[in-house]
Image 1: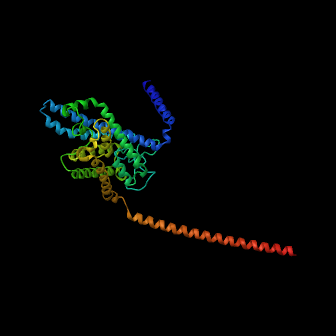
Image 2: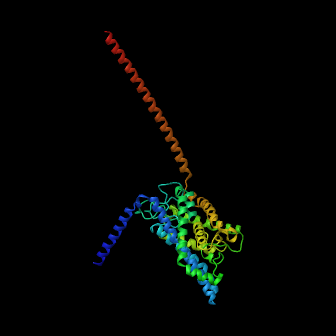
Length: 388
């Protein structure tokens, strides 16, 4: 009886959701669905990631104030905690944005109806290699949560170029929204933290480091090289994991885990100079938000206008990463003989079509000429009859 009642309630719930979706005509706007998924997924991703950063850094300060003997262990564990937090945040954001059917920086971006180019064309969601669940209201193009990944997918033809600018804006808005939510939740804690270490002033080198990436005591050029290297590896491996020729043998769940482990590994090994700089939207969105919440213009002027490095670095890394992906992965699945064969076939077909058109044209001309001759003969016969 209980199972029957649960089934009835479940049916009523899905019926209500279906009627609500049809009422707001959401299924008629598939692009809006994609943008909404991307916005929600990015927001959740930022909330989890920044939440881990705030809690971890505040706990370290509290432990230091309490003269804990395990300060060194806490400081060493800070990198692990933050790296794990961002990896888990990525997995959760992708699960939400793709409906649990894929993601990881692009499981859902199949681009099947928009572009057939590129080695890593995603699937239709049914073979476990690309896309979200096949029962989505449209072909899924969400599950990126990162402008540099969106840029890389557009470069290889896995995502239509028409998604590039809208998705970048949506991902930035999601970052701003997520940062604002986490600041609102932890505002009182931030105020207490500020009184402990900076006399109640919101400064970039203290409380600002809880929310944005700040450089180490090195030059901007070293930070830029670090950012390019980490993002090159990130995009390169993302494209490998989500490649259809490879991911046919990897379930969507494992792909999510691989992406989370990838983020953890990069953050633990390449974040000393520039921090966690794998997502230009997360850093820029956080800076915009904190500049409006009390930190002011220092959010952009701090450390000699350092803010542009976490923005430009990921895009350069994405460009290089796609090239490495093409040279190391795509080259194994491209048959140049097939291209020559297709070119020859297309050329022969063109010649056949041209010959056929010429023959048809000649036949039509002959038929018209015969018809003209028959008409002349008939006219002559009519004239002769009238004369008689």
